Length: 407
Image 1 (cartoon, rainbow, N blue to C red):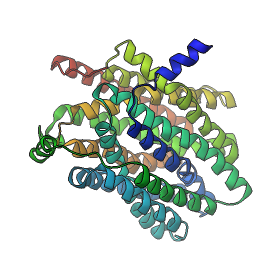
Image 2: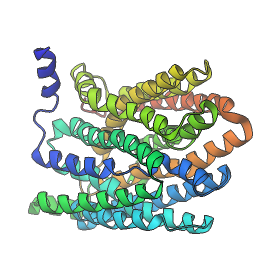
Image 3: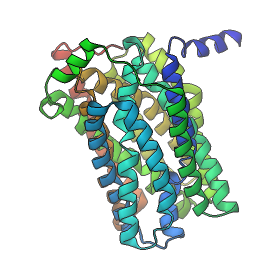
Image 4: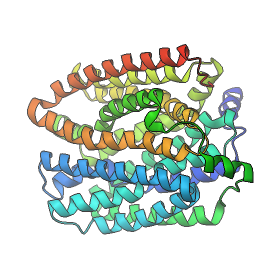
């Protein structure tokens, strides 16, 4: 037992104190992010919007994310990741508090766009900060630790959020979200100082090595893969909660408990899993491929039967796919990004998630509205099979061009 514990702890060794501080702040921020997992339920149950209207609101969510990550990437290359992160957290906190006062459909569309525009400027900045404060050999594990903090926060958030909804009301979540974002910004400002840049590094940034991400065909292939796969993944944050409620008649607190399982598994097993995969020298592209396969299986099993246990199996498969695919795909993007362009590269990488929000939520809602849940899951599986084949193509291209993706 002691050896097992020691091996687990060793997966966290060698990471810088700055990475730990970023993880702490990220955890505080994400633990308060209780609105997002319940947003589709809130829009239907509290605001009375139809499924197509919810789809359009989530499209505005995606548009705000798209614009925010693009601007965030540009600002990261210009003013630095530190300023982008702290500003995004503080202003985003104010935005969460204000969003609850939106009543009309168009008002909510505008409000969610503005909020996510500010909040998602954080995304490319946190990746660049992770690269800046981490040793090259520790990048994948540093990303995994940041993800662990995100998921630990998300695992606690939905459980508390579900209880708050059941015991109080939805509006309380907006206050908690806003206050925790502001607290995270203050904590980061106090505890973490911007990394000093040497004259040589500043010159490299000014010169901007390499080519634009928009001209890098290999990177663009990665982006297409991430857009398509994440379009399917985001269903777990909009369509799946409605599926739990409408097809399985689960309450918000039970739904929060299932989402909690995702976070618990990631917190307990992601770092050891990533460490083990690195030790067996699996390539990052093949790790990403297996992540896609597991995600596809998570939707496929939902059509096997209507038991509660199938929902748990589906969540476990999705979580395994996320744990394997996400850290390694992030690391691929960072390794492809040349100095001076990391903000732009990670901005485009983060924009892939934004595009997924624009198309994925709306598409999922409308597919369910037209064809029902069962047929929607089959469509998603088919798309993920295609994405898996594309990921194998990426692997072959990387190998053919002798691009070394450090395991």
